[in-house]
Structure formats: structure tokens, C-alpha cells
Length: 399
Image (tube, rainbow, N blue to C red; front, side, top):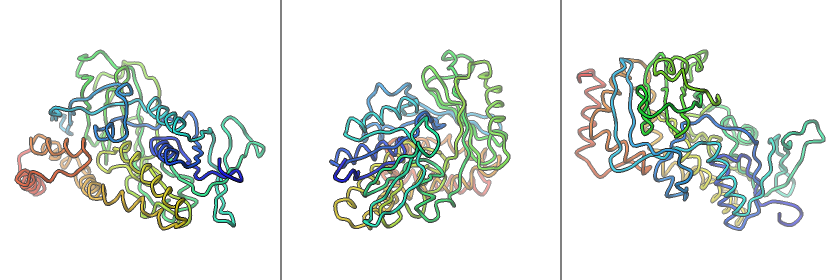
């Protein structure tokens, strides 16, 4: 800690966003307290692209599986396979992966405490006092407080830091996600493939999103998401397990949580608070991918906070969102349109899966996903894809 018992930054949340922000700030020589609520595991497919592995220096030992393709399943049960040419998608177990990230933050110099964020108040000198309750304790006597010059909110969807500090934080649309972690069947048993992710675009499993079966080596994630109130996520997972023969395998644990589907319009309070990860709403529409964007957001939040700490200019905090949207905003916009249109009915889902048979679409989709950039180098392929999209939109193409 710095003079007068004050940290440069308190990071609330120890998931991929918070742990990355804490690591980067500590590496820049800042005094950092990472406050994390111990024991929580977010429901997540656990897929990480090669760009994340390279950019954030993730060791191969954390990968529990390497997926080499995906299978898209239409409402009619017709399947379209999308192989990855010359590459793979890494799969991680979030409990192990997140803990490794937290330990890396500590190794970088961050202090770690297990506790629940209760609130913060702005002090007369411009700093912030953060109150939290230590893990395993109850009552007023268990409330602790620390002071910091900056506060990074990385405490997930429906973030308490965001709701208290940033206008509009309670207006973000959410998809409710639920999954069951099961013991993986033997590779090749039934239709199970330990190197393939299965994605189900079927209205009875999700009226507005999708369901999935993602292999994780010894375990497998079977889940579903939906924003429709009253829709039974557990019931959908039960149906999916029954239809794929996975209702007979052991269930290890069950998890559920909201997933934001749109970045907040502001990620800072204009004074000393900046958001990252799910707290900032950075989960990709249509795909629901969040780990890469969470870690990227954490890095950008750390950079903005470091600049603020160095200059005292609170305008630096707004750079986190500005830089993120410059790099990824167009992708989010395109995926948002895809989700709103193609996921809205089973006939459209049928056409969407049919589009996925196209080699150009498969190639450009994997290149964009794995490298986190829109592919611009093949104008003729884009033209062909645009023509096919229009044909499907107008109902002129065969399904």
C-alpha cells in the first residue's frame, strides 16, 4: 500500500476482466487490491480463441481440450459441420482458469482479499472509500473499508459498482444463461465428439438464443441461454440431454447467471471509477463469447486507470470504452443484427444454419473469431456472401 494506507486502485472482481486489470496495474508499479467473492464460477462454454492465448500469454497446460470444429444444428435437426482448417479453439475450465489468472495478479504484486463489495463513497480529497464484507463473516463487525485513488468495477453482470456509479448501468439487456457440467462420455459414444462444439439453433431449446454442448476433456458443458421471461432453462437443458443421450452421464454441478448483450454507453463516472468485463456489458451478441472481450476490457481499464493515476485527469477513464469500441464495436454491431434477425424464428434459424454450409462463410467466420478482426482481404468472397445473405433474406435460396 502507498502512503496513508491508500491503494492506487481497488479492483472489484477477480474474474478474467478483474484479474487482468489487477495484473496490468501491478506490473505498471501501482499498488492494487483485488477484491473477489470467493467460490463463484460463472456459467460459460469456456472457449478461448488463439488470439487470447497469444495476447495474454496463456500456457498450454490450462487447455483441457482443443476443439477443431463446430456442428450447427437446425430446427429440423439437420446438421452443418464447420471444421477449423489448420487451427483450434482452446477450451478451459473456468474454476481453474480464473484462479490461475488471480494467482498471476498476486505474483505481479497485487494484494488479494476474499470479500463482497458493499458500496463506495467519494472522499473530500477525490479518493474513494470502498466498503466490503470479508468472506465467511456476518454483521456490522465484519464490514471492512479501504481507500483508493481509483476503483475498477469488474464484478460481473448487474455489477454493484456500475449500478452505484455509472448512469444507465441498470438498462442493459440480458440473456439468462444456465448450464450443467457433466462427466464426458467416451469419445465416439453416440454422437459425442470430444473435439467438436455442438450449437443448437432450435426454438424449443431457446426461443431467442441457442443451446450448446461444449467438451472440456473430462467434463462437458451443456447449456442454454434466453432473454424470454418464464422460459425454463433447466427444462431446455433436460430436453437437450435426453435427445443427445447425455441424460445418463453424471452431473458434476449446475450454474446460472445473467449475460449482458450490449456494451454500456458509459464505462466511467467521470471521477475515479471505470468498468470492465461483464460489468461494462462486453459479451458478444449472437455468440455470447465473453472471455476474450472481458480480458481485453480489463487491460484497457487498467491502461485508462493508470493514465488517470499519472495525470489526475479523469477524462482518461473514458478512453477504456473509446479504445474498445474502436477495435471491436463494428463486430458487436454486426453480431447484434445477426442475433435480432436470424434468431427470431425457427424458419430464420433454419436458413441461418443453411448459410453456414457455405465454404466462404465458414472460412471468414473462423478467421474473424480466431483472430478477433473482421476479414477484409477477400472482397469477392464478401460479395458472394452478401448475395447469398440477400437470397436467404428474401426466401429465394433453397434451405
